[in-house]
Length: 175
Image 1 (cartoon, rainbow, N blue to C red):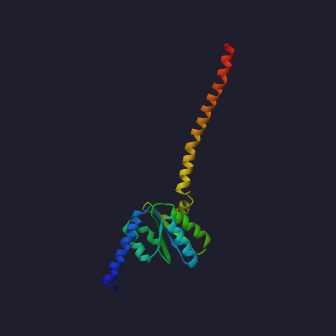
Image 2: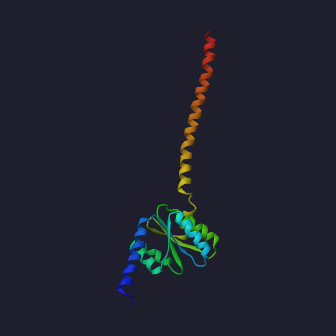
Image 3: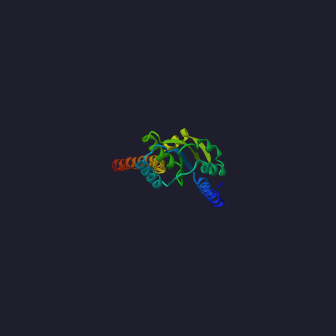
């Protein structure tokens, strides 16, 4: 039977992970079996740069943390060598980075994820990964707003130019 100090440590780990899960908009659970140290290091660096916390933890502790925040359905995906990537701000970042590595490494597999506190399957995580980044979406939105304004400005300028050409001709006819 484990000592009280070990149990307290595990409770603290579960509480910390549960707090991270609550505070994040999305995350992804992966099976990292078969990834090389070199690929794992590159992937962890890419995840850090994207603002994602990647944690390898015992499945039982991850399962308890998920239950604590109301995502008990996640436990069905927690078997084997699993890790969880928790997005801090961007809901798309964990899925994007991990999808890139899942496509490169045959044994590395996305199992499931969560979005706004709800457990989602692998297909949903893959769809989430295909969403363009926040910056790209903002640029597209601004472009779509800007386009009609430019067209209006060009049309108004054409009216002004047309009126400017007719005025000297009308003055010449009067004289």
